[in-house]
Image (cartoon, rainbow, N blue to C red; front, side, top):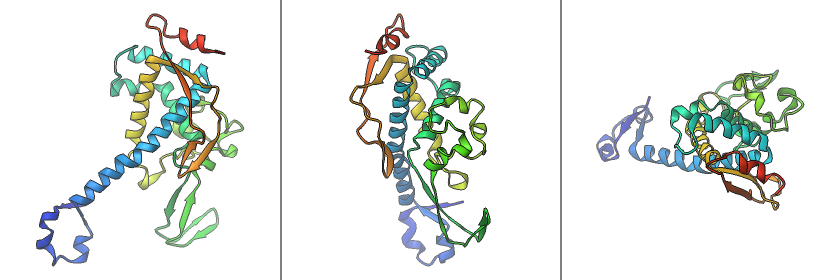
Length: 246
């Protein structure tokens, strides 16, 4: 646990031992952590929304299934509540599959705290290990022959049963260092997607080129031009069908 130490009182605590001060975090530190929490989560959540929208535009059948669920649970115009979002199983499956195929962060680094042995390989304390999230998520030995295909059904029984290994799905890391903003990011993404599905159908623009590229995060190299069409109030499924081939 950390104790909060206001900077205004720091001048009176110069005689504190190093062991005591190491357990304290200043108000400025807390402010910086809050900045990191929101700034680091902005672009990654944006990327998650981009890739999920692209995938739904590529797969209109799944877009329609997601919309039917959203309209059934949330209605056509109401802003969904947190409780509503938690009931959207189909949308959760789609978001998870998007995170599997196009994780915003393609890798993470961990440092060994102790001497350990992994798969017969000795890892000395202090060694930094690169965890290739993108490679793990596309490993056919773990996910099956369709590892490179969009198939949200694989998450129908939950994350731990989606692959042959229970912790093969790691878009936010794992363990004590799991992304602190995971729940917020997923909630934000689901909320935005729900509102979009309530109000719009969408398809890829003819100019779209599928070219995932890495620039710190995983981006569509040429952007994601998507054509949105407002849904009819009387027939919310109509515009989606009309868009096919248009």
